[in-house]
Length: 432
Image 1 (cartoon, helix red, strand yellow):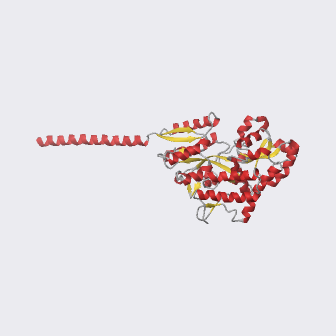
Image 2 (image 1 turned 30 degrees about the vertical axis):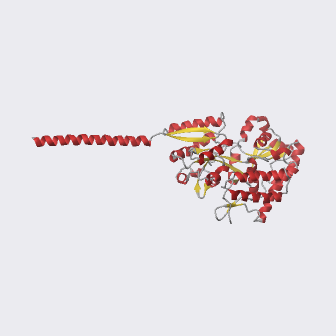
Image 3 (image 1 turned 135 degrees about the vertical axis):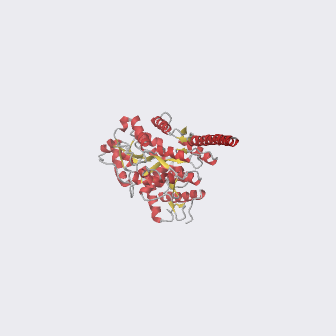
């Protein structure tokens, strides 16, 4: 009897122990599930214009993303592009970068050199939509064999022209080459009293235009050498120097022959855009954002059409890529990629970027869409170098050419030396 009672006590103790253990295990599992579904907050720095249609649509898409991903919260901070670069550099240096941010392609080489960007290659390789992005765009965001940014929109440049001005001068189609432009400029001025063409002689857009004109004459500002570093080779290669010289000669001839307005040598992007939208000159190489000007100035812009930019030797245009930068110090890389790839998804792009998407399957039929995206295969980008000093040197070269009237050959030689000096300062100059 005692023995039977003893075994009953043991059985009860085992039952209590096993129930307690099961409860602990269930508690642990619940805790694990809770951690797995715990909401994370991503820091997202953007640069849309406050109060714009873009802001409204983007906030709607962010809300939709959060609804579909209840474990991810997006904390957005809107910062102007003028302030964004310096704020990002300070945050990166202090180990406090956001999870992801807008940015300019001009910062790509610098941020890679700082070791700030996340290697996205594994994510991209497993991404179902990777083949929907223009190949030359993805190539431009690949550094030392690794994808370190993704594109959120493109600023492809096309030739915009006032059709009525050209027709008034008896011109049925826009010029295809530099030489064609020079030939028709006098007829346009005679028929309309307006200059034929516009440029940005100063500011951030001026080196972008110069880069494209150089590319159209088969010239690069810096070439990647066998040691993986870069060098401007114009002075080492007489043929390249001649080609670079021809581009600066083209700038001077446009000024000397009145092809461009006399004050265009000092224009920034605002003057270039505003004067074209008001019909103050006939043609300009510009981006799809000019559609907003058409809405502001419908009467003056009603005759504007889109074509390929004029070129010297081969078709080329500036391919401005607005990257999404994902930062290496993020504590939530998986969730950051989830949001970034959502931004690049077809729904988001169709809703917010119908005319300037990097996706080949999001193309607006309007001239502000297809007229630009058709030119993507001829797009050129800056090399993946630190560009701060280089783009400033390109601006200074244009000033030497247009303001100081230095000989085109001397300007090309000066810029070649200066680019190499800038590369040496940043530690990117090749010894080859």
